Image: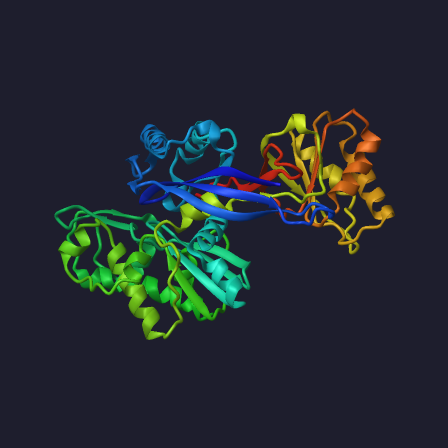
Length: 466
C-alpha cells in the first residue's frame, strides 16, 4: 500500500506570511505476510510561495481579507484546489499571535484553506516545528548529538533542544528583529512594550519619533545575543532576562551543536557588516543588527554552528511537512464519523502498571455535551486482564454520554482495547481507538479520513498568549 497525500503549511508571522505545499507518501513497510506497519516514508515540498509582509490594519489587528487574498492567490499559482488538500496546518507565530483578532483569523482561515486544515498556535509547538523545518532534528538524529535550534523571527526567538532527534525542551523569548521599527527617515516608529523595561535598565535613549544612534541600537542587539549565549552555555539568568521568556522558562540546556533559522538568521550566516543607516533602513527594523550581533557573539564563544537546510522558511516547512502524524496500523474506528476536528484531549492519570485511575469521571464531566478524546500511555505489553480493566473504566465514565468514544493510546494496543470496548458497546456508541500518538493535557486533536489501515492525526495547541 502506497498513497500520496497533499499537505499545506501556512505561517502568518510577525514580519512575513508564507505558504508551502508538500506531498507526503504513506507506505506499508511490512512484508506481505506481516502485520501492517504503515509509516510516512517521504515528504517532498512541491511548491513554495513568495514571502509577503504580514498585512496588518494596525499594530494590534491582522488584516484578514488581505491574508485571504494572499492564500487564494498562492493556491491559484500552485494550480491546487482547496478540496485536493488532505492535511496541513495554519500557524500564527511571534507577536502576530498576540493580535486582538488572532483567534478569529485562525478560525476563518481553517475553513478557508481546505477540508482538513487545522489552526494551531502556541510557542512550544512553533519552536519544535521550526526545529524540524531547519533540519536541526534530522542533524541531531544523524549525529546522535544534542542540538539547539534558535529560530529568530520578527517578534520572537523560538528555541528547541533535540537529543538524538528527540525533543528535550522547547520555549520562546521576546527577542526578534522587529521589536524596534524605523521609517525611511531613520526615525523610530515602534518599540515593543515587551522590551521597554530592558531598554530602561540599559539606560538607552530609544524613543518613538527619535533618530537613534546606531551604537545605542547595537548595545541592545548585543544584549539579545548575549542572552542566547547564556542560554546556550547553561548559565544562570537574571530577572531582566527571565522577563523575556514567553510562558514557561527553559530547563537547563546544554548542547554540542547549534543551528539558527528564521529571517534574522540570514544575517547570522552572512559576512555583511551592518554599520550604516542605509543598510538598516532598507529592512525597517533592527533585524540586520541583531543577526550580526549573534554571529559575532557566537563566533567569539567558539560555538559549533551548523548551516540549516532552511532559514527564513524553516517554520512554514515544519508546519507543512511535519505537523501531521499517522496512527498505528492496528486500530479500531467507525469510518462514518471521520473526519473530526478540534477535539479537546483529556490526559488520564495512570498507576505504576499503566492502568488508568478512577479520576476519569471527574475529568470527563468538565466537558458535558462535547466530544472529547481520552488519552493515556498505557502498559507496553498489557495482559487480557489489564485491557479488561481499562475498557471497563472508560465505559463506566462514558455510560451517560451520547458522544462517540474517542481513545488515543501512546503504546501499541488500540486494536485489542478497541475490540473489547466494541464487543460491549455493540452498536450503542461509535468508537475511535487509535495508538502510536503522544499527547498532553491542553492539546486538541484532528482525526482525518482513513488511509488504508491508518488515520492521519494532527495534534495542536490552541492557546493564545497575552
